Length: 244
Image (tube, one colour):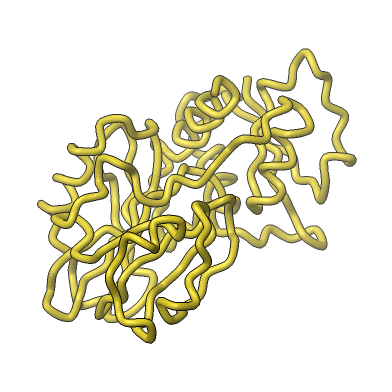
């Protein structure tokens, strides 16, 4: 039986995915008419007594820092990296913009004052900024993207190569993305995790483009709440992490 360690802050659930997971666990236990899963609220791991022999059955649910610190402490895993732009999706068809790393800057022809979006991809929740080309750090951990005219941004939820739902999280919710193009992205991304989110944007010219991909932990759900599969999505992500 898996036990989910759900992070609380001042004894309150603060993440939407934690709230919906709690309800999904209740649903699964009701559906099967037996206790399939358990959950424990905790402010930190120091509040929980975890037997190292049983550590694989515990799944951390909370902030990125909360989750990563659990895997480092109990599984000695400290190499979990963001996905960002998968190599298989790094094409102009899906991006509609030029993307490169900071250490490739000298290969790019651009006006010094042209603006670019930069993101530190050395870890999760790192630096993001908009800078001039001349100010881009020459660093392989800096992902650089040309700016595009974004009208709306959407998060898709993918499980076993199937798009389960998609939710608008920024911009004009009436600017719907091209679902056929998203499905093409999913089908092209053959070395994907079993569960992940795919963020896309609808541009001013109505083109749908890939923003980035996230592994399925510590991701805002924005209303996605499929209680039939939500628990499994967290479990399968946990299994993939501990068997890296």
